[in-house]
Image 1 (cartoon, rainbow, N blue to C red):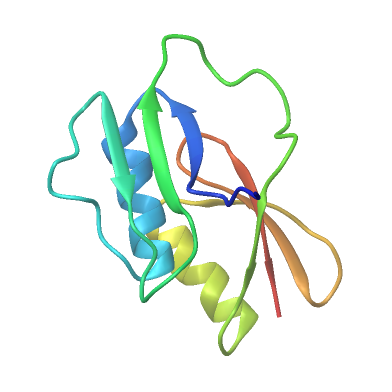
Image 2 (cartoon, rainbow, N blue to C red; image 1 turned 135 degrees about the vertical axis):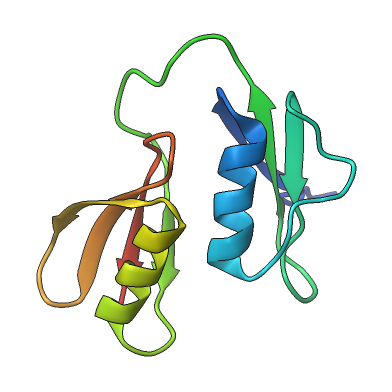
Length: 113
């Protein structure tokens, strides 16, 4: 028997804020049963793990040990600008086709062309 990835979990201070960012970034929405203590986002379309956000008391203290790599559909610069408007910050550019960003609570992710 094998297992599958059911969800990817984020520890955070404000689950609804971080869930809203990721829902908008990925073209989905925050589940209607989400609360200030726990929230989740189902993947748009069919398949893929859901994203789970749970409130924890401690702050993020180090670089992520794993992260998402997003592929921009269309212009990379326009996608980076859209994500910044949603609350992300640009951490650094790694060449012409990759931008390292952070979500509203500082979780790093990459956006590639």
